[in-house]
Every structure is written in C-alpha cells, then in structure tokens.
Length: 393
Ligand SMILES: Cc1ncc(COP(=O)(O)O)c(C=O)c1O
View 1 (cartoon, rainbow, N blue to C red):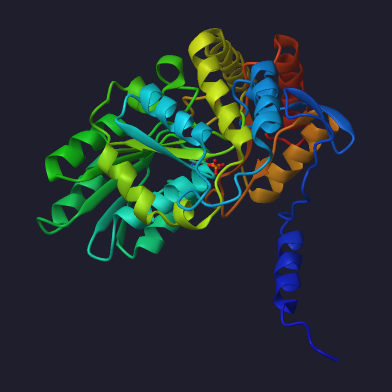
View 2: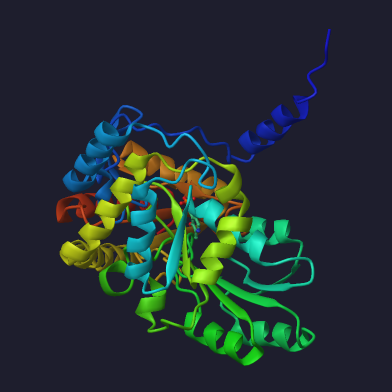
C-alpha cells in the first residue's frame, strides 16, 4: 500500500490540537454584518474588517448587480491581455484622484498589491528596511525581491536610522511600514520614517490596508491623516476591508504605475477582477465622499468600546484605531476566551503564534460604524463575564 507522503501534515495538525491552537473555520450563515449568524448562532460580530458596513450597503449592492447585467460575471483574462475593461480604468482614475496621486493600479487583493509591488520594484542589489510587525504580504514580497531584508523593532525609528547609516551610499533602499498594524491597531511611525527616507534618499512605502476608509479626510488613509501627501512614494490600500468588496491598489507616480503594469507578477499573470467588483469599489469611493457620517460613527463606536474594555481592566495594548486587541498571554487562553465569548453570543477571534509573538496571544476585536450601542454594550457585558470566568480580569 502506498504510504501517505503528506502524513507529516497530520502530525503537525495534532501538535496544534495538543497546544489548543487548532481552529475550525467559523462559517457565516448570513451576510457579513454587525449582528449575524455564525455556525447557527446569532452573534455580535467583532471580527470583520467591514469597518463602514459597506459589504451590505444598498448602493454597492445595486452597482454590482447593474455591472453583472451589463458586463457579465468575469473579465476573462489578465489585465495585460484582454482583461482590462473600462470599469477597471475608471476605478483606477478615481482611486488616483482620491489618494491625490498621479496614477493608481488595482490588484486582485491587498496581498498581491504588496507582494507584487515590493518584489518587482526592488532587486538583489537593494535593501529593504522593514518594521518587524509589517504584514505577511510585505515580508513575502521582500523575500521574492531577493533584496537584503533589514528588520527594525516595532516603531523603533532610531533603530531604522542605525540600519540606514550602515547601508553603503548609493544603494537602492526601501523604507516600509504598515499604516495601521493589523494585530495591534497602532499606527506606523510614518512622519518620522518619511524624514529618514528623505535624509537617506530611500523610497518610502506604506501599506494602508487598515487605514483605507478609516483614517484621514473621507478615509484617504494615514498619508492624509499625518499630512504626508507628496512624501510617500508608494501607497498601498485595500478594497477588501472598509471598502467592502475585494482588491488592493497601489497609488503613486505615473512611472511607478506603468512600471507595475510591466513587471508586477500578479498583474501580469493572474486574471483581473470581475467587472462587478470594480463597479462595487467605484461605488464605495463615492460613499466615502458622500457619507462622511459613516466614518464619524465608526470612531464614536471605537471610543465607546475601547474605553469600555479598558474600564473592565483588559489589556488593550497600544491601539489607536478601531482594531482593539484584548491581550491575554498564552494561545490556549486566547482561544478559550474567544470560545467563551462565542457561547455568550459574541464573535471575536482568538489570535495566537505565529500571527502574533509567543506570550502575546489575544482576542482581536474590530467595531464597525454599523454596530448599535446596544450591541456594543452586549459585547462588553459578555467580555466582563467571560474574562471574569477565565481569570483574565
Ligand atoms: C496590513 C495588511 N496588509 C495587507 C493585507 C491584505 O489585504 P487583502 O485582504 O485585501 O489581501 C491585510 C489583510 O489581511 C493587512 O492586514
């Protein structure tokens, strides 16, 4: 009989079970929204990136349906062959205007935007100076580029400076940070890193996945929030989180964008978005421009929920955004807290190593503009009870 050559995977899965880190996929029975049904249970949902509730916004839904009726369900090709439709071009024009850059290019996801960009604009001879908590897609892009990767401790600008001082003059250098860190909810040291990039002649890049639609005027991101327009060479954003649909984009100079058209591998070698996705994202930008009250409500809810958790005695780390971690230490404890919350009607996912460092496991919460006060209070009451049961508070 043939031995299973993948047998070692089962051994590794068993190890995860033994450590209490094995996770079954939770399945939504309903739409992605603030109160929904997951695995047959009605829950207050604190785990989506649907910051503004746009996944179910009537305008986006209608635009998607119109696009399907008018243009079908698929683009049928990669962008560089036959998969560029007018609606893709219109979205890119709109994104560039929104981000106040010369041009923009859309990728299939934020992940491919980061990985495709970092890997194509740099080569073996370059140095990448990267915050230690930068997203996996930046790390993968950096590895694919074959550049030297120099990691500085989280937000430690002095350490980044020391790295840059050691880089031989004339070396092509990229300084890169997340705008909002996805597991901690704190902000990248963007203004200080821009100064460093300027001083050492480096390229400055920010991944604003969790800042798009959340920070800056009408959700333009951290570049706008910090008044850094013109100082950041490469801005990445997602269309998958606050924008409610799917995709990622790069905004920057026309030369950068045209270069990506020719060299970014996900752009060249993977099919473009269905027209309905591009049409939905166009509608999302319109909503950001027309309904700023959504962002105001997101921030009111964020203040209410974060201060509520803190008043209960939870460790919420250094969060400055709607992402609020509840840090509990060991992975198994975070999973137990998440499970206990679920039993009480609140969905907040436990996150452990390797997504966050050992000993820093957490339950990660994200509020949205569409949570009602009652739902957030219900969630705080559940945290109080579950945290008390498990001795977290
Ligand atoms: C910081 C950061 N960058 C990039 C991404 C990838 O974005 P997307 O989900 O659109 O691929 C994510 C999402 O998980 C993220 O948190």
